Amino acid sequence: MEYKYILYEEKDEIGLLTLNRPEKRNALGREAEEEIIRCLEDAAQRHQVKVIILRARGDVFCAGHDRTEILNRPVSEIRRLFHTSFKMMYLIRTVPQCIIAQVQGVAMAGGCHLVAACDLVTAGEEKAKFGMTGLIYSYNCSTPTVAVSRAIPQKKCMEMLMTARLFSAREAMEFHLVNKVFPDDQLEEMTFAWAKEIAQGSKYAIYMAKQVFYAQVEMTEWQAYQYAKEMMALAAVSPNAIEGFTAFIEKRMPKWDESTVF
Image 1 (cartoon, rainbow, N blue to C red):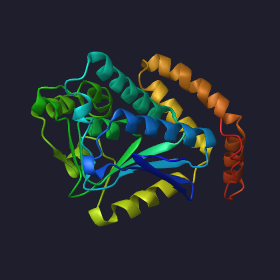
Image 2 (tube, rainbow, N blue to C red):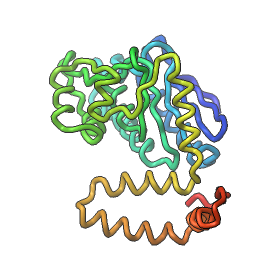
Image 3 (cartoon, rainbow, N blue to C red):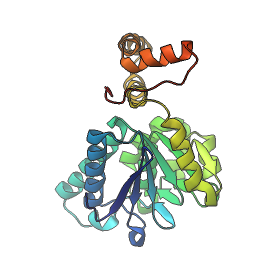
């Protein structure tokens, strides 16, 4: 599949989705987001990879939405842009693959939203920065708040909104926006190695872990337990869970049946 604003390749059960607008600081325009949507939908349908690394070319990970697609545009057009953004962010949460944001530079506003929407995040120690910078333009980061406020403590999210400052990779890891911080020159290599580690699990297990997590996290505790016990029962009779338990008892490596993803 050909793309104008992104690059995509697959290697060793890992998908590599690269934002490819370095001259625009990888800004998220509607067409770029539609390409990401098509790419993720295709990867989900084919399900050849277990993990997708979302990365970017250039010095900036993502500077947010393209201001030229917002400034002096009719409300209906801006609404369409952010509906596309919502569709992309929601798709990141619902595709069966684990998605890792590999942040090599600044991720601000919609770029910070994109990071927070991903399942896991790695960051370069010196160059990666994170911020909700909308108030600089008197334009609140409303949609980024949805994902960021669900990924980090509320007071820290409010601080990001009110100060509009950029936080370092180490700071972002302290308040749980980032999972792992790697040296800048080893970010790509170490993120890929982490993705390979995750990909040792079956497609079914990765999908179930992601599906159950996002479904239960918004439930009450009682609702979450009712849902979780049903998922435990259904998973227990799946071919891969049976194989996993059997392999453990027999002290051997499991052989996953990747044809029974769901």
